[in-house]
Image (cartoon, rainbow over all chains, first blue to last red; front, side, top):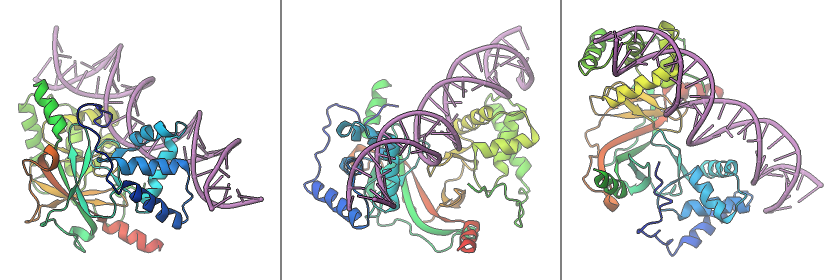
Length: 165
Length: 165
DNA sequence: GTAACTGCAAATCTTTTGCAGGCAG
DNA sequence: CTGCCTGCAAAAGATTTGCAGTTAC
């Protein structure tokens, strides 16, 4: 699959928000307070994840982290991502049959845009009329969260498709 | 993982609706008219899929089909499921990191209930206030479909959890 | 110092693919 | 007949696990 994240073309990586370093150190401090042992590998994973405008797969996180920390192993990336998820700092997002992606925006409720072609996932704010959880749905099912998934084509894949048509 | 579908306990498999055989033969006829070659394996896959109240994984379809047709291979099940999906007779549903499931109800728009514990997926009718596709969402993304995912615990997993607590 | 963490490699699970033979139309 | 289907087995991609060595606290 063509990887939009390793693309080096005209659209610049947006530079991190002014608060980026602050956000990262807040996260790391919060985790340290919860008894998390801070290592270079964990810092790298947290930083890579927070710096991306779209949600990365474990493999993408590994590749990017390895640029700074060449010995980091994929297993460690997985371990770290799972712990971050368990602690509520990131959300695991699997909305198609492909590799799971990790969403660093775990605090504010939001929905997702999923590109059918390249698999990229991007956050989108909840709309006013979004459905809400109900205590009991059909057949004794207890709903605890509701998410809306918008599927379609990202701009880049639309352009690529038009070009090849 | 504990498989709620091979469970043989108190809750009877609901018997197929009165129209079940009719539905199956309608599907098969529709496919034959589109030039689909009808084989025992394909019939078995279509029947197994249509007979289940919840959506099965490829492996579950294979296990059930093998009861009637012991030599059927998993690769053939995959092939058949993909073709049914390509022809619009079933929908591939992958809403968590686990194996993809196949939804025979492709004609009527609906949403999904997903059990966080056992991974079971069940259809649920769309609510009145469901969000609708928009031509353009943020950043040039073109939305073509919207699905709502309700996550929680199915009745059986709720009971199991309470029992072990 | 020690429990927690890491890297490596092997195992697991799901899905795909290549190819020789089989069968529906 | 002939081209589409099938089974088998191997490959591929994603994730998990076991274990010996390392390191943050």
